[in-house]
Amino acid sequence: MNTARTVSALVLALGTAFSGAALATDTHDTPTPKTRAQVRAELAEALRTGQMPALDDTGRLLREVHPERYAADEPVIAKSRDQVRAELAEAARTGNLVVDFDTLAKAHEVQPARFPARTVAVLKTREQVRAELAEAVRTGNIAADDTSHELLKNLYPARYRQAQ
Image (cartoon, rainbow, N blue to C red; front, side):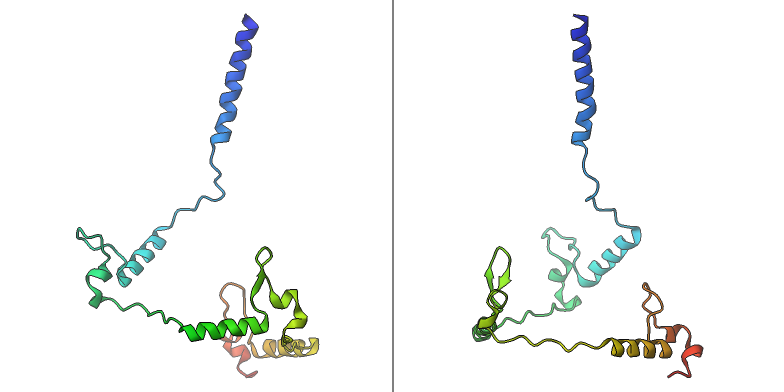
């Protein structure tokens, strides 16, 4: 009887201990909270564009209540039926239509002989690339670092003044 009580207490304790791990949420995909500056920037943008709710009972946005105060949205220009048909005909002619929806392979990839040859961009030689790099380093037309993307000639104008 005593061992049965011990075993059941042990099973209950282990079950409780491991159930917490099963119920725990994965925090890898949990978005991080926004900073105060991010929230303020979003609020300012929403106020500027009229994307804030109007203070009435309609639930409309400020831009809907007062459209004269906000810039109009850029109109979406729809294509005509003839334009869409012309695009479809061109895609069929060049083999730019998906023929295998599992792999998303296009017709010109599956049967390249049936379609016009694709033009290949002319590549530069190694010597041309080296010459361009040497010229960029000489004139300061090269990024100073990966974060600011500022050119060396802008950071150190005295050093590169004579090279230009």
